Length: 339
Image (cartoon, rainbow, N blue to C red):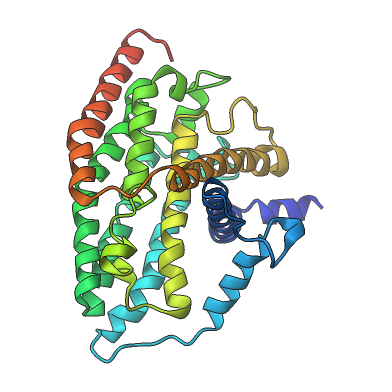
């Protein structure tokens, strides 16, 4: 049994495959189901129900996944076929890649990256890669709606990636470290930075909403204006990879926020064996990240979509000053030795 636990807790297997692919897929499915149910409740509709009434219609998401997976993939004759086919797969791989550098336990025995001094910088740098591939999606599709959608993505990312990075790096300024495991341990047991520095936390939350095209900032797709944005020409499993990529990227960001602002595995103290030292801390972080994703999904039910100019105006006039104030307050926290 102990050998099995060590195999399961083997970082590349547990963190990248089980938590990365399987965990992210499950969280994305639950987020989509919760999003549909919340919107239906607010609009006084039933929402997903008939496929599995006892499960609240959750099996409708599974049915949709099977339908897309078995659907014919249509490749227009005008596209760049190599880029058109490979980019969705690259988006998924690059989206999950930051998990390889995010420690979910302080023990180097289970995850050597826990001792990496610049793990936060590396993880943030890798989260900026998927939007670049989204621009490639639009270019490879050779479709004017796709190109407009990818250009919108470029505008949005230019405005909000800076805000997200500054807000999250406020945690590093508070703890004087870029090591994610050290930042989490500095918040033990309940000195969470979301409480001590709500400005940076709010700025990070808003920036993640925008940079992952979550409502009310679903601007690159914006079905009423540009059909499906960068994904207009995609169908079948390729469309699933593109659509699910946004939810998975949101989940990765939520893990980072849960670690640097919500104490990660705190107030739990990891043990030394694989189960208590790696798996339980990982599940605690997963639960916190899932709650963040569900809150983001709920916003679809209560807010309308922003226009591009409104979103960019909010970035430069509201989110950026908020992130800078949060960064300044982090310096004050470090100077006063409050964390």
